Image: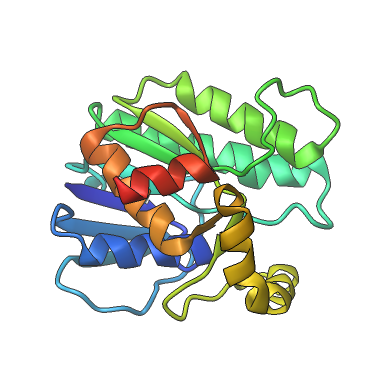
Length: 222
């Protein structure tokens, strides 16, 4: 399986990249982002692309792939709906359309979030935009498409978030991780499980299109 990975320098993307490089079913990984990860591995190729909404200059390098793991995203904190839509919806759909044109049998996995609003009519801005993004991705015609909706993600293996608000949040809750896992296991997942679940969804399929934390954990452990 050959993978294209967007957002490999983010917390979720770092975990997904790690699992892809460790997994024998993944034969090649191409990361695309505004900056390279700086990692070196026989399976790994990287493209640093400033404008991710226009991939025309690198289309020749994007063919022959089986799946895209789209882990790119930004926090909605401090953003208005127009700017958040441009980054979350417009960019994602532009990438997806280009990849589908070049790889008609491709699968696509999008990292959304728990609380995403599929109706697109709720009061929470980010949830509406994420819901619209999910809905329109599912209409494009990918071979298979799964919407991952993780909630609380425990970073493992030295992985850290680059978002200051989240970094503070994770640091404060780190001592409570064992308790959270014990009392509310379905509300917490890990960077390892997200990566494994993506691989398993692609190679074996998943029981549903929208996967919450408990679905991600079950798929990872299957």
